[in-house]
Image 1: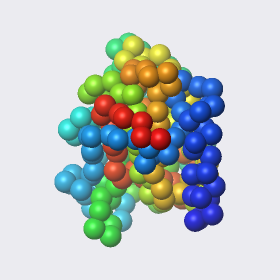
Image 2 (image 1 turned 90 degrees about the horizontal axis):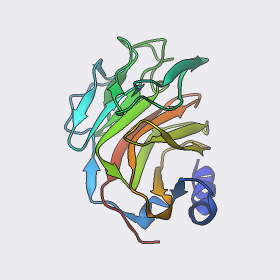
Image 3 (image 1 turned 30 degrees about the horizontal axis):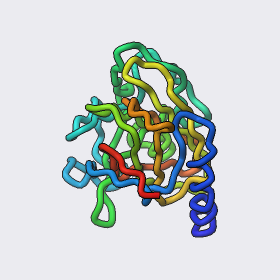
Image 4 (image 1 turned 135 degrees about the vertical axis):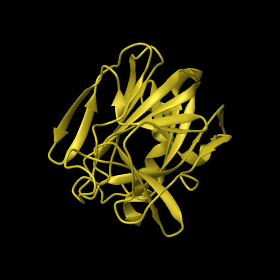
Amino acid sequence: MKYFVALLLSLFPLAALACGGAVCLVDPDSLALPDLITFDETRAGAGPGYLVDDVLILDGARFGERFAGQTLFTQGTHDAVTGAAFAPLTLLAGDTGQNLSVVSFMGVSVLNGYGHAGFPKRDAQGEGAIAILFDNDQSALALELRGGEAGAGEVLFLRRDGSLLARVPVSPLGEFSLGFLRAQGGSDIAGVVLNNTDPQGIAIDTIRFGKALNLG
C-alpha cells in the first residue's frame, strides 16, 4: 500500500500543472483550507455502523447518495452515479438501507456509502456512492479516504446549476488524502459525487474545504 501512495503522490505536481481539466488532482498538503468536517461528533456504530437513511446535515455541507436528475445504476455490487443534475442542485438520499452509515473504529468515525445489496450486508458497505452538497461554492477541497484495496474511483464535480464540471479518476485507492483544485482560479464547485469499484469499498473521514490558498 505504501508503494501505491508514493506513486500517486508523485503524480500530483504534474497533474496540477497539466491535468487539462476544470478540476485538477493535487497534493492535499499544498492547499490551505480553513473549514473542516469530521464525523466524530455524528452518531455512529461499530460493524456496519449507524444507518443514515436520510440526507445527513453537518456544518457547511450535506451528504447523500446523488443529485436529482443524475442516473444511478450498478456495477456488480457497487453503485455508479453519472451525468449532470437538475437545477438548482438538489441532494437525494438513497433508498432505504442503500444510503449511508457512520462507522466508529479505532477512535474515529467514518462515512460509508451503502450499495444496492443494502444495510447491513458486508457486500454493500463502502460500495455505495457518496454525494456532498456544500453550503457555499468551493475552489478546492481535500478528502481523507479510509479502506481501499488498490481499486478504482471517480469523483464528479458539479456546479450549482447542476451542470457537470469535471470527472476526475482516482486509482489506485487506499488510505490517504486527495486534494482537488479548480483550474484557472474558478470557485464554482457546489457538489461532488464519489464513486468506487474497490473490492473492499471505501469510506471518507476528514473533509477540508473553504477559501483555498495554493501553497504549492
